[in-house]
Length: 230
Image (cartoon, rainbow, N blue to C red; front, side, top):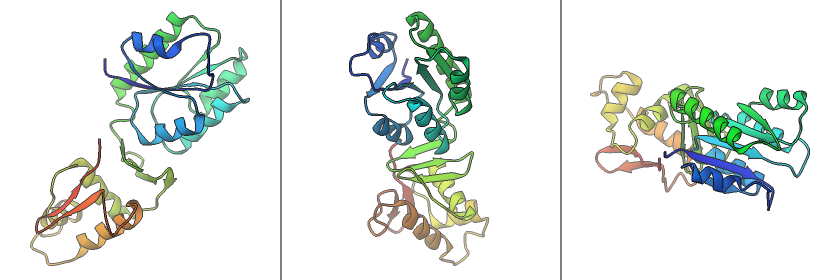
């Protein structure tokens, strides 16, 4: 198995060694003790499942789940809750959790629920088919949304089409002629600075420093390339 699980757990010494049991089952587990930092990591790195085990404040797990969904994250979320009230589970599901497990729980049941969510994740390709993360930038191709440092970025329809083409051809050098033909539908022999203008616009919105781009690179004499980590 190569599935990655993000466990956000604010208990310094929980009774059940959940990270260890998950790793023994063959999953790669990234443990975060701070909910804010954990949520930030979830928005910028791809995971196959997120487990929220937050107890230090009332409704804390619900708030984190709501925030992650607000920013467009569609990775499956499993919430662990100390409440046995059905209404609390309903709230968790309504804010975007895919499953809720009441504590204390039998480890065998929790592992079965994790397996079920990961199986559904593989089938539906959640978090991988439409959402792409590279550095501080996050793009949801299905929802046509872009975030920079967790904040929504407004891009034009043509800028998004150009960004989509770069993502679909990541690490490939793309000539201006190819971009004109595939993104704009223009005759590639057309003399225009349209591509350069739109690349400049994307850099202004996405790069940390548009004058020294690290994402959309200029390949001298050839064109442009999206150089971003997977």
